[in-house]
Image (cartoon, rainbow, N blue to C red; front, side, top):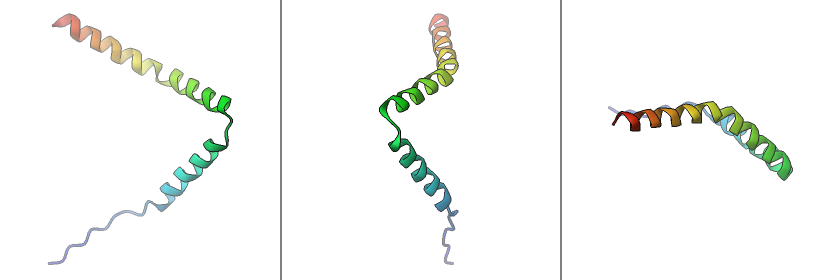
Length: 61
């Protein structure tokens, strides 16, 4: 019995990723830093929750 695997076509995903990389490459350094600042703000609650959970685990040991 010959079983060949059928993988989904991800061409459109790869094209979108490449387009995004090209767009970000065109940005100025300052614009890239602004994006990083926004990303840090977005993940700040997640980081704070993870740190609080780690502190609680240490305190309960």
